Image 1 (spheres, rainbow over the protein chains, first blue to last red):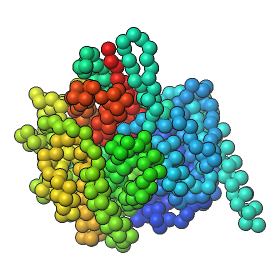
Image 2: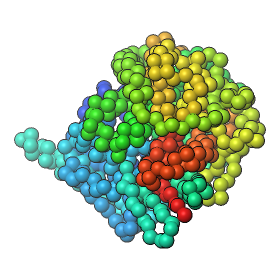
Image 3: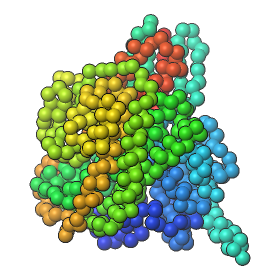
Image 4: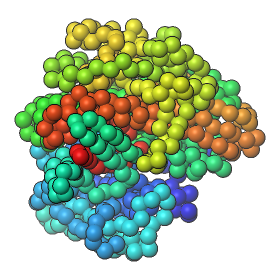
Amino acid sequence: MHFLCNAFLKADDRGDVTDSEFSPGATHENREKSSITIVGIGNEFRGDDGVALYILRSLKKELPAQVKTIELTGDQSGLLDLMMGTDTMIIVDAVSSAAPVGTIFRLDASMDPFPDDFFTVSTHSIDLAQSIELARTMKRLPDVVLIYGIVGKDFSFTPSLSQRVKDSAETVRSKIASDVDGIFRHSQTRQI
Amino acid sequence: MPSAEKVKPMSNSRTLKVDYLPRVEGEGTLVIKTKDSHVEDVKFKIFEPPRFFEAFLRGRKYSEAPDITARICGICPIAYQMSSVHAMENAFGVKVEGQLRELRRLLYCGEWIESHVLHVYMLHAPDFLGYQDAIQLAKDHPEAVERALRMKKTGNDLVTVLAGREIHPINVKVGGFYKLPRKEDFAEILQRLKAARDEAYETVLWAATLPFPNFEYDYEFVSLSHPNEYPFNEGRLVSNKGLSIDIRDYELMFHETHAPYSNALQSTMKGRGAYLTGPLARFNLNFEKLSPMAMKAAKEVNAAPPVTNPFKSIVIRSIETVYACEEAIRIIENYERPEKPAVDYSVKSGFGFGCTEAPRGILYHRYLVGDDGLIKDAKIVPPTSQNQRMIESDLRNFVTANIRLPKQDLTLQCEQLVRNYDPCISCATHFLKLTIEET
């Protein structure tokens, strides 16, 4: 419950919303290109489906300022726009799978296409796999696209994460921090 | 798009199953049973997260409703915000007028543009053109997909200019907004809206050339109707069969029943049954309120009320996209920043009612607020639960008329038919599992 209560901005207290969070007038067109964008996909009300948002929120504090973080909770075709503004994208998502709960998948989508069985039947939205492959077809894919998936257990209507998923979230959080660190080191080496 | 897998095995029963991606945010299933070339049963099952939110809202402060309900749907958060703020303002006797009211319409324009364009190009057009999905469409028609992405981004960015951030809008409050944009904030988006309007016009001409299955039905169309404008936020609830009620009487005319095979509640009109809400209903009931270019586009493709083929909803969505662009341009060109971002009000106890036009149909909210400003009760009826019974009726009629089609073709056309309604799967589910059984 603590997680959920803190998820909302206080409706009567917008004075504490920072400029970076609240910026009428700002669009992708007039923002600077970010070298690394981290996207968390999920629904914080659907149990383990919220794991990516949990990771993103805890990771945000320790990231360099130039790393952009985005929470994506609905239409994932928004990824196509986000991809236009970044060299590296790291995407975190929950996964439903026969693999043990808490299992972590890591996929380099810039190298390999998504397997066919990752595609969904959706009447309403474009999902992650379709967005990635559409971006590849439209030549919008950033240089590096890393995807982390965490196998969840409970996707019912609850704001809580399963303990095993929470444990794996810690692992993914530190892996992403390490990825970001590695990318910046590599970038600095190239500049030298 | 899924690969169709025949799981056949037992004597004279057959099941055609469509696989889905196992990413979970709910589940939807469609089952059609036929016997001796007749349709025996149709069940379109979805889960309904808004019911969870209704319980979750109880005990929360009235001012939290816009932000909380915006989380119900990642595709149409504005619709949820608008219905909730209108309901609270109705409870408190607050009237938001002038430029603040115009800004709310502008916000809705952005949501219609992004939602309609996504559906027209990425989800529905591949059905008509025989492509598996938008990826295959993009391989042969990259210019069409680029056009869609440009238009959609314009809608997204319009929402961002007004709502303060991209994903979940945070700038809407009871009485108005938290902060207001300056006129110059719209300069760049105004130019892109003009380009989007022209591309939306081209979209109408393109959509009208698609091959439409031959299917007509005598629907009862239900939408908002306002004396002076194509409806977004306000109006009476009307139908082509004589309904005309204030939105506070919604629950007197509409009721929800629990289908035993589903978690979802299905709405019907009392004594009249299923009805259709969404673009076709709005168009048929508000045609004369369309903006000049939207009207011109409709006339150029011979779209005039009553449009009763639901597959032509793709054309109507395109016309509504022209309207949304044109209306956004009008509002921006006439915009003068108000002195205050919101009107003053006092919290009062009582019921409040709100109903606005989400991209896929009417979205009804009703709240009971206490003296302490806390929500005592909430009711939210999303458009998809209102259309659900009509979707089943359409499927029954369509399968009956096309029972001799090869099963795979029939399956694909049933999916296409469901997509006519652009059901809010984001509110309910990320995937749809479809099964046709023949005995």
